[in-house]
Length: 94
Image (cartoon, rainbow, N blue to C red; front, side, top):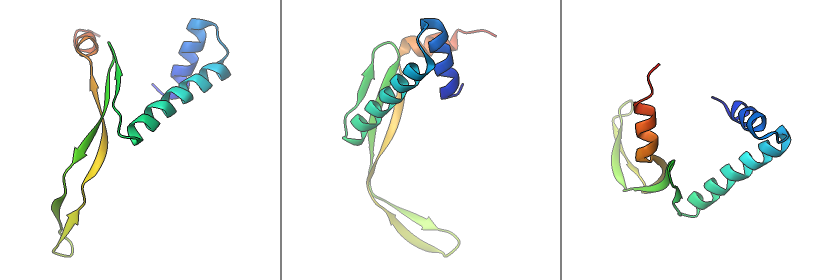
């Protein structure tokens, strides 16, 4: 499902114009991205958590040049679904 399909579905279920729904969805995603860029986690009860994971510095290898490189410590975004969400997907039979 694409963002456009999500916007169309929300617009049809709520009878709100697609333009307004598009702006709302964009604002929602921007708020999540900004919070995570600032190092904050985002918790959506019943859906899941967008968390910032910290990766430690490590040594990697460039196989083509046969050299070692240092991969610096960095943050990475991650999503952990809520148990309710996992169970709903798991129990859905096609």
